[in-house]
Amino acid sequence: MRLIPPIEKFDSATVNNTLHGRSVYRSEDVPGHNVFKGWSTWASNGHKGVGDGLDIGGQGWRTPVVAVCDGVQTYFANDMTKLEVLYLEGDGIVAVYAHVNAVYEGTGKHWKQGDTIGVLRGDLNSPHVHFELWVDGAVLADQTPERLRAKMLGLFGEQTPSAYTLVGLDGVARPGPWLGEDGSGYCSLRVAAQAANVNVTWDGSKNQWTFTSKEA
Image (cartoon, rainbow, N blue to C red):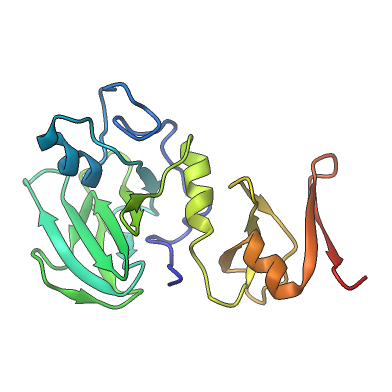
């Protein structure tokens, strides 16, 4: 399943500077913003929560937040604070959204990919959506927020590559001359190379990708 970003301008929006507390890459009990699904899953067992999350800046309050895939809203909680949170589950995916005003305040609601499931809350100093992504039971995680965003970008976009930014084998997103007509999507480097039947290398000295035909 190909996913779509949970919010517009996901690739260029501001993200948190450090990983959230109690993530898989921060074993110490770090005070501050915690993950949601990982913490709630493991806290009752005496473990620190596992998981990683991004705070993705929006274009102001009431910025739409959308379903990344077809799925069902399986969890909703609103303690009447800015921590309103919901889970969307479908085909091995669990997407966790927080700091949103949900369209549907409950569970069992079926969503189609791209449906607006909420909007950014207006009671945050800097409106953003907290986002976690779990695939086949494992959290998508990495060592820094930017690397985590790059890894997520590798899952977003159309099935047919149409990206102008590529996520390399090292998980880092870099600008690239991929020939997409509208430049609106993202694809992984492996997918791009396979689709185009090319070899792809990154030239750090020139800060650019080099594409050569495998048939040459």
